[in-house]
Length: 393
Ligand code: PLP
Image (cartoon, rainbow, N blue to C red; front, top):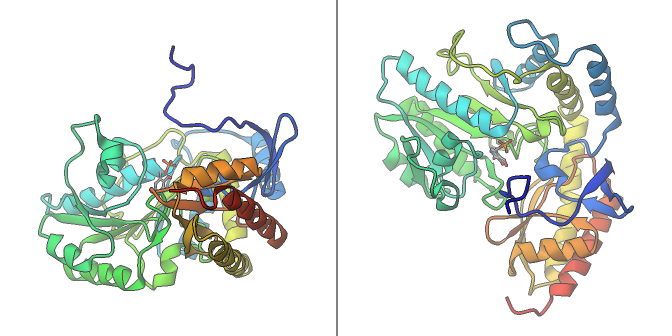
């Protein structure tokens, strides 16, 4: 008999009833150190007091009114995002995959309005993950995600990662946009090289092709900059954001330049819940906290601290781990065993981690994690790895 919750997830037999900072608790009082943060969502940790305060105050005032009306909380968050980034304008969604849908629509509409309706193709990359809506799975294109769900939205060109010659060869008079995660998340915590990002920008400038960055996972301070692309010195025309921006409240956004957004006039897009007062009140607080230079510098320093400890862990368990990759607090441990096995061994140590790709263990702690908790997490990872040492792969 099918489970009453549609069984599309492989769930661990763990249920948490409360959380604080980087710690989660089960009903029987078991305490787990959380290095997943809801897959890069709980940017300020669980039940962050500042967010609880804003959310409850907003809940007492107003939950929902519809985008038929002005929403001051939305305006505040949009202003903060525009002030802090390349963008001139923002549309709010509830999730990353909805942000992907709008980014794709925006790119096509841009060329349609420019009198070049044939420019519909979007170039994407191997290992990409942009969400689970039909446009987003077509964009990523991996067999695992698309099999059985056709016919898929046409117009995507899938290229190898970090191969600029392949991009040069693939950009034609039909290309609308290039869509890339500056640091791939599900694809295994793979940062695009600065040279690749800069070359994409150059191609974009030469051909008019719009650049879309998917910063759903790597954005909102996770790499030690507000957005990961800032490390590379290049900016996009359109950017998808979600996860961390709501700190745990479902919220996403598409940021764009005035030029790229020029086709999105009244009536061309909408969302009942997107930009609702509860979500935007929380998001505005998250932005206020995360976007300060002090906060971002602290994330950078924490990333350095954790990385150093992880390098030592890799050296201590050469049968289990191969290396550390990633940026800031978006780190991946390349594994010689199946990463799911390390995740399992972590559960035995009351430690939560997340697998990615076929050989990477993802570490995406709250951006507020303390040094003491990071050191404790690595001790637990050490114990988890010891349980796997010398096991044949
Ligand atoms: N883009 C990236 C880079 C992601 O990591 C994800 C989710 O993991 C998404 C898009 C989709 O976001 P959501 O699950 O909120 O639809």
